[in-house]
Length: 444
Ligand code: TRP
Image (cartoon, rainbow, N blue to C red; front, side, top):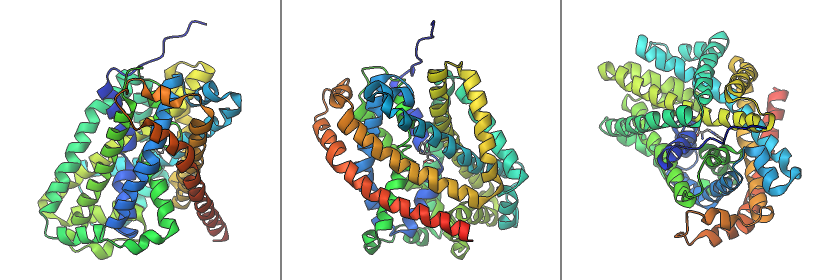
């Protein structure tokens, strides 16, 4: 067969920005601040950093080892190092990407709608009513479709011309907006109260096992780990990239944006004394409390709101791109479809599977729990077993281009002996949480 040579990133910088683009998304700007505020504030942030270092970084490097080592998409990459028995895990990854994107694009669709409305008419006087209209039914499905169309277009453009180019333009823009808005927020009268709500340290929360579980699955979700997204991106790398260094840069940037998002969101909400509007759902907090604040803020509210939703949209888009790329790269490799056909058909299927999530928030929450918590923990656990115990010479692979890095034996020991038992523990609680959620929904 006459195959085109495998695509490659144009530069190291392009790869890092695309990977940061995958990592930084709704998880940073929406889930992280609220998890932190609800689960011990500064104490949670502290625990989160430890989890990123202890489990997130090792798994990211493990995905890089498999991806660059095999230069294949997830299913074939696992088979390359572990034989056909590991293909089902690759299938789980692709399925995970498929499912996560199906509802992620629904929330991104709301974001697109909010950004559009902010630009065209501003923020109305009934944020809760507006959210109700945007978030369910035909409206939600329509904007979900629009968002997916943009995602498909970029992925169809390929690694360099599509994914890398969009990341190089969009990621600096996002960083600029988030830093700018966090600085602006610090000048608001409610800043102190907002920071206190976000970061008031409560170390007693950390003793709860569910907080530990939440911190771990949040780390995986935020770093795009556990389902082959980082694996796929690293399969387009050349041999001489320093992967341990890139992993530290990517995880560090992801954390910084999440942390800054909290510094931006809470002062905005507290500036107008709207804290009692903080609904108990994190979704509502982002899409109701903040637009409310923008609406009440006077003349600056509109530009600030526009910037906020543009940043959120950019984050969601570069993340959705990576989710679709996992599915598309697997189809290109296994069925030898051309990229455009794979992007278009898979994008259309994912859009269809997302329709029930567009019609019902309860359904969306259920898919989120299944795919983003359960699948990712199972995926990450399996990855640690694979790289720790099955793949031949992972240290050798990771050392290429990283001869100066001396902690790789420590990394390997972690992946073998520390990460699997920790994740087994987390998995146990994730299964219980998922079970409770399913029976809760069924039982009404
Ligand atoms: N990391 C993204 C966020 O924080 C979401 C995401 C993109 C993702 N790709 C992923 C999550 C792969 C898990 C796996 O919003």
